[in-house]
Amino acid sequence: MTADPIEAVPSQRPALGFIGGGVMAEALIAAVTEGGLAAPGTILVGEVNEERRRVLRERHGVQVTADNLAAAAAELVVLAVKPQHLGAVLQQLHGRLPSDTLVVSIIAGARLQTLCEGLGHPLVVRAMPNTPARVRMAVTFWIASPGLGKPALLRVRSLLGALGTEVEVAAEAGVELATGLAGPMPAFVFLLIEAFIDAGVALGLPRDQATLATVESMRGSLELLHRTQESPAALRQQVTSPGGATLAGLKVLDSAGVREAMSAAVRAVHERALELGQLPVDPSKRG
Image (cartoon, rainbow, N blue to C red):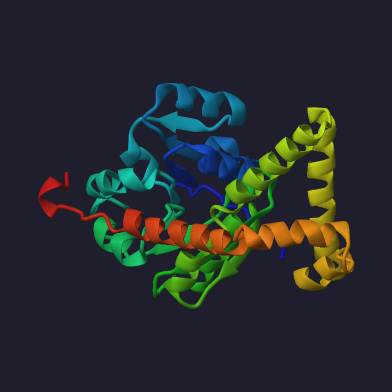
């Protein structure tokens, strides 16, 4: 489906506002500007760090400000702060968003109810992209608050689709569970790559050759999985001969409890994300 451009309205409101200008915000900025969804001049990023504002302005040509309220006046606002800063942002923005502003949160663990009540605003989408967004290969699970019309939902699909694959889920639990799996997956994969490279070096390979063997083999394996659509188990069995060398290695991984450790790691991420999202908002501190 061809994405619809995110255009500024005649009132000169920013078309797209960001609260927070970190890695994920920058990935989204690059995706929408390079993909023609929004012109850099129609994007306003609210970021407290002066150096970060300079980097975003120089790299992407976007407007920047230290004033979150200015960025929150946009037609579509992306909440992209760290989870531990969410409470303060909600207090700052509560009741101050234009009634027609669409808010998309990419904050891990932040529930729709928390966002809607904290902002005093009903038009909210909760999404969770992962860092392959930087190369337009993210997978983003999302859910919208009740009442969003078809045009708003199409805008969300255009925005998140610019990062890679977007999937609307029927229940918020789907976003939460995906946070525990897709969100940290790049970190888990990079840890495995580090370990395999170190193992190759320990065997005597030069580090550059160990890196090449690991990265290209992993990339080729993922492409094989993608193209053949065979199950991971079936593809694994194809390279595992009875009594062979690969089987010996797999037995070591099984005896070390690798599967159980991976499952425990995913569960730990999921549980911590839920904890980070349960931030109380003190009404007495709302500005």
